[in-house]
Image (cartoon, rainbow, N blue to C red):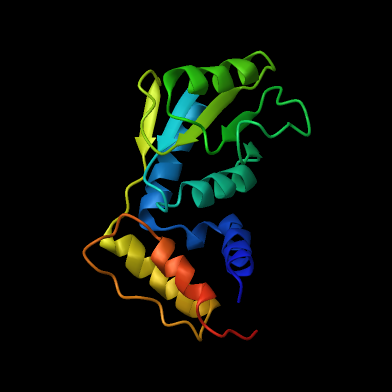
Length: 175
């Protein structure tokens, strides 16, 4: 199976809250609470492969937010009164602020920027960090979705889910 197919299959499952890792569920609940409180600007950050995009896609579906995979992607509809999640934003204060200000002037209710490191002037920041429990959860999910995959065991480094997801592409899989 090609990387794009495996990744697409996993992202398609992001609509189901049962597939979120324990850390993603906790971060997602915190994000929704902060956004529901009326906060206009939020920063979700974490290392590459921690599941930020997966969580953002889940929130976009579950909370009916607008999801943009990068700051340069055009909006398909005006974000008036909606939460907008913008992935792959630079953690540089000026660039994150430009994203926020641009969407603020388009009347977005709130903007969540997703970065690899903390944006220093964010009113609210939520870090997505993985645990061994998250890796175990993902291993069982992969075993259910891709029964012929031999997912790597959880080692000392639990900072990224990529080795587990990449395992889906290295095996001969059949539907």
